[in-house]
Image 1 (spheres, rainbow, N blue to C red):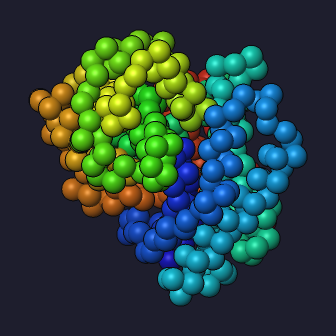
Image 2 (cartoon, helix red, strand yellow):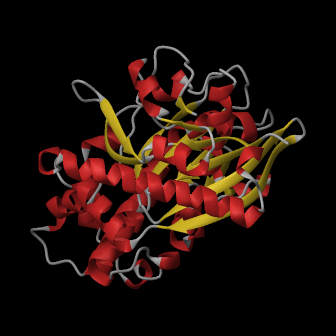
Length: 366
């Protein structure tokens, strides 16, 4: 066996996904999975910090969170090992992208900042840990994200049809996989997926997510608000582009809603439509025959039905139809990137991130 652990906590900070993956010659096999909860107080601190301006965040706060997050990532890896009755010395490495606080790829200078100290993970687990995947791509002139398209290209490309992979996490990102294997892979963040939906329902009901879009389904879409939200310059910006919760958050939403007396459920319905419409507008020019969806939003009927309606010539379905569980694709990505790093193999796709060249991603902590 060729075992790796992949960890992933997205922009919604709803949980830490941990996967045990076997990359043997027979193919990629998902051996075990574990969902590790964030303590409510730590989650709220992270969400608050990612919405504040950088001037409001103290180095002391961030340094403490870095250690606490690293401890929690280590806990999730150890819980996965216990669940799967696997010994640490059977694992080649853990791939941990960390928890993104700030992502500013178009600043001067551009930067990205993830916390979750990999020294702590390596020390607590006794397993080699690969982390800090994004900054090398940025050093090469890239956006540092999205990184999952490299895995999509390796596992989901078909010479029979043009495919698009859609990840509905906190932020939505797409990967175009042309049937022509000589054509480049294209990928970018389209905008918010679940991040605003989760933040808004938490603000009003103290629930971590809108289960199956049930609350949004009780509201009425507000066309004027939707058009106003879609006028944000990010949606019209050409690729390559990436974004995060430090941009699309409740402060961003308030700028558009403060002058109006919308009902909270109507705002939720409009945010769901924002996700669908912004994704559909991004996909439409590429005209794929099949859209394979992964991430937590795949379980939201409002989003999935909306995408099918707005992309009538495209088959919209879960990655499960291709044998890949939609809930674990991103965590598998970082197990795969850890493997790439140990084997000194390239990890980014310049056609996606905008980097000047393909590079080996990640730092190794033994």
